[in-house]
Amino acid sequence: MTTVIYAVLVLGALIFFHELGHFAVARWLGMGVSRFSLGFGPRLCGLKRGQTDYCLSLVPLGGYVALVGESDENDIPEGFTARESFSLRPAWQRLLVVAAGPLANLLLAWLLCWGLAWGWGETRILPDIGAVLENSAAQEAGIQAGDRVISVDGRPVATWKEMGDAIAASEGAPLHFELKRGDDTISVTLTARESVRKTIFGEDEKAWVAGVRSSGAFEIEPLSFWQAAHAGTARTWELIDLTWQGFVKLAQRVVPMDQVGGPIMIAQLVGQSAEAGLAAVLGLAALISINLGILNLLPVPVLDGGQIVFCLLEMLFRRPLNERARGIAMRVGFFLLVALMILATYNDIARIVKTWTAG
Image (cartoon, rainbow, N blue to C red; front, side, top):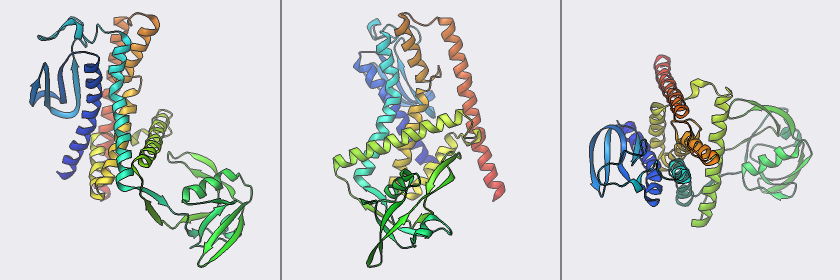
């Protein structure tokens, strides 16, 4: 139950922020909103402010903002005017409203990463050697477990990543390492060797390696408010790039389809993160928010990305897309979305069954 509660809270917050993006821009442009709902199906509870009904609905897997005249320009509920109709607005205004939802998810991810960097600081993996592989370039150079790398080719090294980047950029050229060994400072020359390793997506890639492993030592560097903003921006971009690559690799079949997960897997991940603490939950929420944002920007008609494409085509050709073509595209998009949901749910259940049988 604790896992379910955490999952509902996290997903509810992400969905709320997504719909808030649509709502805020629609109201800014003077469009009418008849309902702002978290969840689908029958209305459970809520309140009405002005002409808008703010409510919670029975099925908690999503939410929606009901715009006046969204599907039919003549469908104007009582209390609203034709001026507030979504369908009667220029394509560029409709595009802004549609794009605001996914962009709100990306904005939320940035705010979360900023808050994490400011509240918890930045974790830096130190360039401390934990192990040296047999017959490796590092062993040949005389590097030993327990050494700390101070500089590479005269450039100070403060993190494991900086050391790794220097080795990767060498492309086999000799590198001069300055090491701290006990109370002594020594210099060695290392020539990295070309190797093949697996990427995060399971692909083979060529890399220059030294043959060392990290000791795992780290330190937390406190950041100021604006330093955290910069670190949060960098982290958000890393997550966006990683998420986008994941979608591309999935389309290329590099990532197998059985890796696709749905609400059940998200609930499990949220539950595991909750055990690790608030920072882990917020970090996972940022990643999920980015996934929701990018997923909704995909050019599938029933998603926000598909509606953006319709608006762009209307702006380009100066007339709305043919209703018949639009209807066919929507039906195809709906079929694809349902198929994806079925696949994700099947994978989630299959993983649970596999875990039970293995246990």
